[in-house]
Length: 378
Image (cartoon, rainbow, N blue to C red; front, side, top):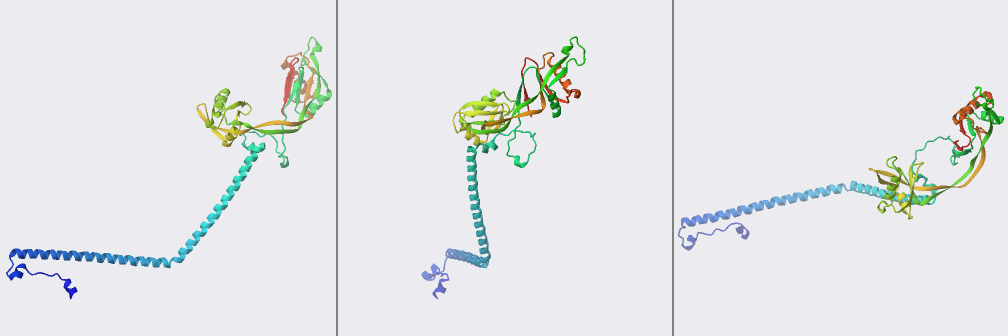
């Protein structure tokens, strides 16, 4: 009964009735009505709050149900997830093994590279790939594979000629041999014309073989300079040679460019490259390690190649006599004609087959009182 009574709002009687049973005035009735309205409003608010709490409780219950369903689904899918996890772990393990193998291979290659670098500094032949690039034209003959390690030399023989002599080269070796066998030849100077002094229409010349010394064995020692570098890739005909050397010395003298004080400089005319020699050791090695540098020359920058400078020195050479098969030395030529008419007279005479001659390839004549040097390229 106590609980049922507590759920009802107790209404007190009107003040007038409690005090003596007299009737309430209209004002008192109005106040009482207002008080009941406030009580009703409070009850409605409490009811709305209870309804809101009920809805929130239902939402929480639904969330709990959803969570339970999700957990049950995860429990059912537990085995496929485990297989996927194991597969990923296996791939990670294999990747780690491969990474370890690659790391070991990298270390081995670095050790080999360092060893090759050390050998390169000790053995000059190992430095040949670092030498400057040059355009080459192959004019030789293809040899067998077993002859590839042999050094092939093209002779450049200088043969001194005294005044009153000539060198004549025939197209065929047998013609030169016939001329040499005759030894003395009478050459017509008038070309068939009669002169007042017949003795001056002819001259006698002596023919002899041309013997030269050719190298049969050659030893060359190569040494890499520790203070010098070879600079290639230079621009051609941009600035004069002396100005180019000044600019290179100025650039490579600065420490910020990796250089130092330059002791000497040399321009190689045959290849258009420059040799720079530094005062201190170690500078050349650092520049060679860089390989290439950009140097401002004139109004542009050029990428120049830095290479070791190799010095070659002949340590041993052996010679053997050799006879020129197609060339003959003519001596005893008197000074009776100008240079060009004498050359023509000699060539006309020795081209005639009736005189034992043949087709002339080349002829060089040195008048009396002069000297010259003939160069044999083959």
